[in-house]
Length: 213
Ligand code: GTB
Image (cartoon, rainbow, N blue to C red):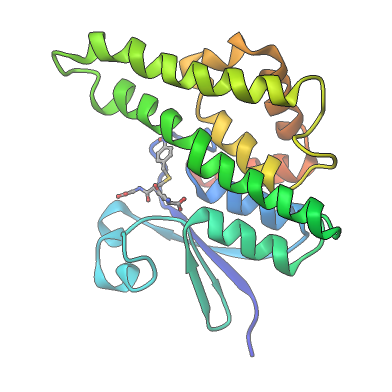
């Protein structure tokens, strides 16, 4: 059986190669675990057509194909990669459960207010109520970052060695760079920089940039 890996990414990412689209976290996980992969590029129009909807019912990227396995949802894909290949989850059962908890925390607790902020700035910026709402949304992000910052403290990573939890948390926090809020929390800004300095992140970033520059 053909077990080669193919992921689906934007033919042209709206971020112009900043690496903020969610194929980046999947590329990063594949690079951390040393898995070669191919990329299928899709246009916004093709994403809503039946062929792509069969791969992802929400008409989005990323999609992951490996033999007869087809997955969507970046968190699920990173989890799958981390379970199948060494390097992203500890072997000790309790440490593994905690790393998985951080994966969920990144996607379920930290990413939602960050997405809300991105929507408030980009999609709703021209609405008459945008100016009033923006500070509220920014403060919700600050409240989460404050909690995360206190937990991280002076540690390099969230719970011991770098894990899929850090990979997702750094990926989520990267989305804040354009808003400038990350710099209000120096230990989180350093945490993100440590993630970006990983050679696997560098390879993933360069691969998406090569498509989008
Ligand atoms: N929960 C899903 C997952 O984690 O996989 C969400 C997937 C998702 O939102 N995909 C987006 C998409 O396909 C691309 S990543 N959108 C097209 C559509 O819904 O029609 C989100 C994204 C887009 C653009 C930027 N940017 O320009 O900075 C950043 C992130």
